[in-house]
Amino acid sequence: MHHAFQLYAHLTWHTWERRGCLDQTAVEEFSVALGNATAVTGIRVLESAVLCDHVHILVSFRPDSVLSDFVRLVKSGTAYRANVRIPGAVRWGRGFYAASVSKSHLRRVAGYIQEQHRHHADRIPKQMRGSANPGRQPGVYQYKGGLSPG
Image (cartoon, rainbow, N blue to C red; front, side, top):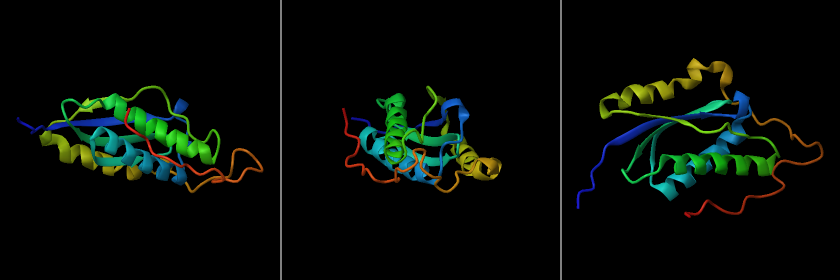
C-alpha cells in the first residue's frame, strides 16, 4: 500500500468580533490544545503564530484527514482550558479559512507565519490579565483531562 502524501494547508481563524482576548496564558492553553489535536487527528503542525485576535497555522495532512475536526479540537480545547481559569476569557469567531499550499511555497508561507509578531507588533498577546470575575482566583479549577478521539 502506498503511504506517501504531500498535502499542506495554511489555516487561520479569529476571535469573536476580532476582539484581542488571547493573552499569554491563552497562548499556553492554545499550545496544549494544538498538541492534543495533532495527537488525535495525526495532522502535523509545521508552523504557527498566535496573535491576540487571530491565529495562523501551516499544517501537513493525510488525504483522509478532516481539517475541520482539527480546527474544532484546537478551538474548543483552547476555549475550554482558558475559560476554566477565567470564565469568558476566550471566545472564537465562527469558522476558519483554509488555503492549500504547494510544496514549492512552503518556505514562503512558513516565513509569512514566522513574521506575524513583527508584522502585527500591536497584536502580540500580553501577559495574563486579571480575573474577569472579581474574587475568583485564576487556576482554582484544574483541567484534568485531554481531548480524546471520538
